[in-house]
Length: 286
Image 1 (cartoon, rainbow, N blue to C red):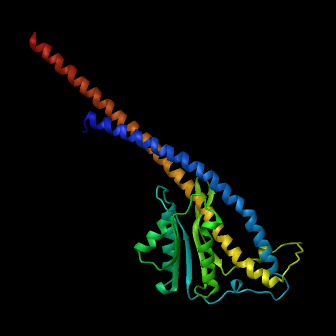
Image 2 (cartoon, rainbow, N blue to C red; image 1 turned 135 degrees about the horizontal axis):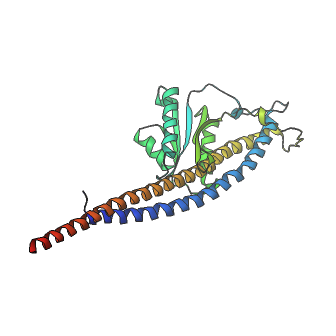
Image 3 (cartoon, helix red, strand yellow; image 1 turned 90 degrees about the vertical axis):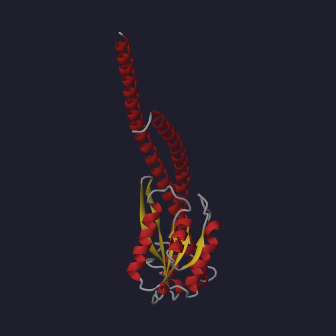
């Protein structure tokens, strides 16, 4: 059994840990609140851009674009959004597990796919397992701006336009609530299902013509989907961190209670032993 000094040291150490995890929980909660606002604030812009793109793509003209045409899939790209740091519970492992399962299910050779990693955890995971990577970005800010992701998003979309990849999928954690995040995998390119988002009773006048506008808007739309997923993933990351730190704080509190109970019992036993020895010594002197 541990000595009273050891138990007291463990209690003090656990109390310090509890203070740290409690502070980290509050920091994550603050970051999550702002990240949630950023993610929700981006939605109206993305929806309007999608509406305009759908209006042109679904018009009765002969306007078309390579990003709207489905072609034979010879190579697939997976854009994976993870965190740069740990202490986020199962946030990263759930995403990376989905990536591995998808690759094992769909591909037989490494030539058939490539990974674009956003976040150090995803990058290190792919590097360690020797998965093919074509691009990556590390050290993403807690509250990223479009400028932070623009170069990678533009290069990724260009890979599709140049025919280097025939399909682009994104895997990230979708923010549902502060206590719930859902791993989401969806196809970004080619752009599909625009019929459901076609503008209704919106008469647009285009200058220059629709084809030139679509040439500019479609890459921007695809890049906006990547940025929107990043904002969504960041909100999920901070929520996962907050939940993990809350759990750690609660566990530390439970451990302190258990150690305190053990300490008090050991201290009581030591006092009882001392009283017994004193009583025995007094009896021996009589």
